[in-house]
Image (tube, rainbow, N blue to C red; front, side):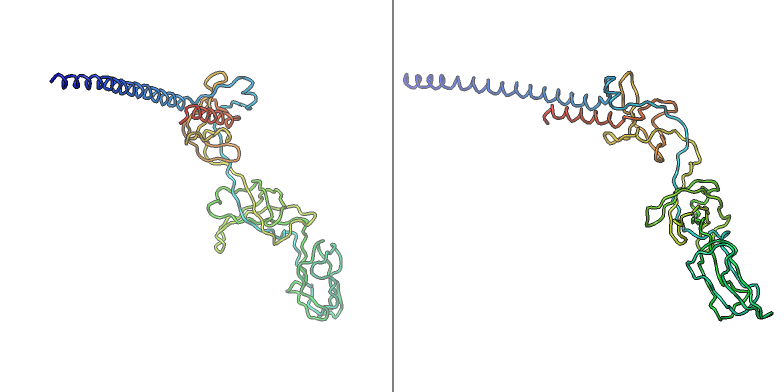
Length: 329
């Protein structure tokens, strides 16, 4: 009996330290989990604060280096560019159809298609059927022979042209104006003209727009008379004309470079204080090469960063990347 009691005491003694160690181990784990939980919440709270903080503060030197320029939101018109197809044609006011005065037999045909004729030069000699006498036909203008219907020995009639001469020192550019653009194209508008398939570019002014829509082409014609002293612009060449027009209604405008895309939002930076800038979310509309409409987000007269906005955006992105790297997750 005494031996059994002694053995029980020994086992109880051996078991006691194990129980204490195990309990302390669990307690240490709980403290560790509490500490990790606190650190994790603190890290997430710090991350949330960082994501909410989007203002940028610059020194005067950094602001100058970034090229920061401040402007005010103002009302104005957006310039819209309309592209019209067209073709170079003869200036029909400088196109001469030459016909005989009297029907007869062609004795001479002095020029071929492609020849240049000076005004007053004899282009043909005709023997009249009425008088049987010959007479000369002279060029009424200087220009290029673009068509010929005469051969020595053949009969020619006063009802048909024997030569067509074109003065190519000026040409017409005939632009097709379809219904969707008809209300915006007017006399006096400037156009930038590009030859299709070449690098030739020039400018001109619309001097005439037909008042009707052609039933066959479903378009009107806008005409530009173009100086062509070197025969650079050849009739038959296809062109594209870019014409800039204003939108009908005024709207709030900012410089196009001011608009940035940040954290899936369209923003514009505004000054919050000396050397401090904050992005403001905006809704934009139509734009041209320089300006863009502000539909919502800024009021007329509000100050904004017109130049240097991209550098401000880059600083925010860089700051966020550094913050993520510091958190290590």
